[in-house]
Amino acid sequence: LHVETMVNAPASRCFDLSRSVDLHIKTASASGETAIAGTMSGLLGLGDQVTWRGRHFGIWQTLTSRITIFDRPQHFRDSQIAGTFASLEHDHLFESAGSITKMIDVFKYSAPLGPLGRVAEMLFLNSYLTRFLRERALIIKRVAESDEWKLYAPAA
Image (cartoon, rainbow, N blue to C red; front, side):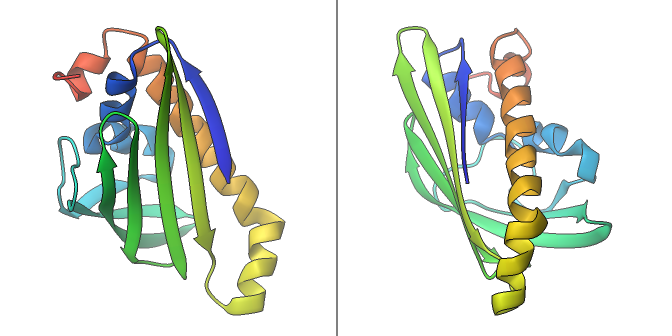
């Protein structure tokens, strides 16, 4: 999956907001997602882990991810180390053009259950996850373009 969002804010601010546990909780409020273990607030850095718990498709699920690539302010990756998916890697990329930053989410995943999982990906998972990424990016954009960013990434 690939989602691009243009933000009128510096790449460093967008990068830090994207790795904020507190802002992630706000962006995922519709699913009741919260951090339950690992780094449970603040900004994630290389090697940090967080376990999320949220309700998706009416089922409470947990997912533990680790920051496996960290190159501020251009790129970081969170990789699933435990959870529902057979595999999951989420690359967060940030390209600057003057005062504008292009935030790019590249979300690579595979559902469990082999062929049945691939059917689920095509039928509903791809659209659900794309919508989740877009909604999250729009909240990050709104926060980055206002003074609210100081609540989540004061060092940005």
